Image (cartoon, rainbow, N blue to C red; front, side, top):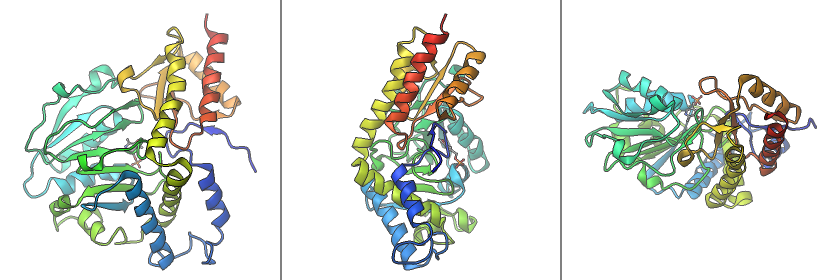
Length: 365
Ligand SMILES: *Cc1c(COP(=O)(O)O)cnc(C)c1O
């Protein structure tokens, strides 16, 4: 088999090896079925079992109460930037409040005005999105249709430690890049959603956990596919569901439950992995500078700079030679971004830590 690298891609991203091995083993024929997951009907009892198992694994991991529906949709994170305002603004046409903490919440806030009056209640732009708002900085509308935020900004590497306080207004969270990386209390949310390809599976699947009373806001005039209520009633099988991504998601959630031991354990692992890198940054005498302020550093995307672009290029190249790929930061932030999602093994992070120390020793003046 070809040697696997340590893949620090921001997404689609590294998957757990036991999951890939199981997919490979059963790809020609699912046990007892004799056909591939790629070949069977989304209405077959085999697939029904798979989608039900995927949902029950997710419900177990996040302790999702019965008054929340789980939807498995296509269109990625981006489609939710439109689908959420389309469905939640409702007949009352109330305003929607957006907390803009980085690129992804900014893109979401750019889509919302097509469907309802949109207020940017906080924008971290003046600090180049390196910090998060204090509770006192948020001027929320108590009558808003919802408050929207992103729990982890994948590009800037800033992550909320806990939910913003929004009173009785439904809270909507884009958790695409920290989904299932730590426990969350779903009851604090109106909608908690994520595209799968960062932390939960391959591209082509979006998971949405929605409080059932909010489904009543979806107007009948909405296009069918874009109506949350239709998907909820059909249990995500209104049309052909993305069968393969749902199958892999089922295996990833099974891995989280049985191999990892749940989200408390996952969080502890993620914390220790991130600390390995932030410690090097903090002990580098300013050679490495982290993008995020220390109190809002992401456990998933570690974003930092070197003293020059030339050194950044040399770093990326040297890392690649040692089997560590996709470390270049997003062009809007520059520098290096190490995405260390759930499935990144601690050995990969240790290898990067060792390389960072060695690189500084060799290149600092
Ligand atoms: C990657 C990402 C998205 C975009 O998802 P697509 O599936 O590409 O549409 C949205 N939000 C966050 C936080 C992301 O990291």
